[in-house]
Length: 151
Ligand code: HEC
Image (cartoon, rainbow, N blue to C red):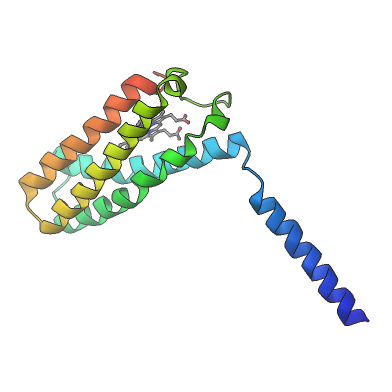
C-alpha cells in the first residue's frame, strides 16, 4: 500500500513539474532570456573587436573559438522577441513590434553572417576574418539604431 502511495505521490510531483514546464513563460522571463543571450553575444564579440582593432594581439585560434560561440548564440535570440513581451519593461522600442518581419529578417541575417564568420575564422585568413567581422557587427549596430532604446 505504501509503495502504491509513493508511486502516486511521485506521479503527482512529476505532473505538476511538467505542467509548469508547459505553461507559457512569463513575459519578464522571456525578456531576461533574450537579454541574457544578447549579453552573451556581446561578451564574445567584444574580444574579437579588440583583436580587429589591434588593441590586443590577433589570436586566430581564440578568434575562431569566439566566432563559433557567436554562430551558436545568434540564432537563439529571436525567440525571445515574442509579442507577449510587447508591454514588458525592456529596451526594445515600440517600432519593433510594428515592423516585426523586418526585425526577424535582420535577426536571420545576423545568424547567417555569424555562421559565415565562424567558417571564415576556421579557414584562418586574417583579412577575411576582419572583413566578415565588420559585416557582422554592422548588423548589430544597424538594428540597435532602429529598434533599441538609445542611451
Ligand atoms: C535584429 C536586431 C538586433 C540585432 C541584429 C542585434 N541586436 Fe542587440 N539588441 C537588440 C534589441 C532590440 C535590444 C534591447 C533588448 C531588450 O532590452 O530586451 C538589444 C540589446 C542588446 C544588448 C543589451 C542586453 C541587455 O542585457 O539588456 C547587447 C549586449 C546587445 N544587444 C548586443 C548585440 C550584439 C553584440 C549584436 C551583434 C552580434 C546584436 N546585439 C545584434 C536588437 C538587436
